[in-house]
Length: 67
Image 1 (tube, rainbow, N blue to C red):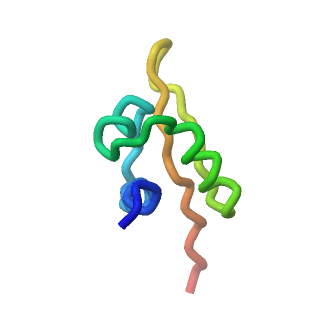
Image 2: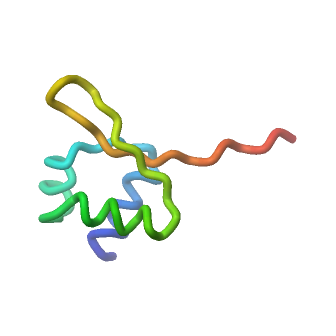
């Protein structure tokens, strides 16, 4: 499994990660580039501000259709 696949798997599980967490957990030197790549593949990944110093990336999953 590639580093990008591992990152996407974490996002699919609902995890929200800072750039530093992405660097240390997945060994990704440039988290912004990986997020940009995933966005180019059609995934909606947002950067949410937690406080003045911290922001976290997270995947926006499509709403489920009502039955």
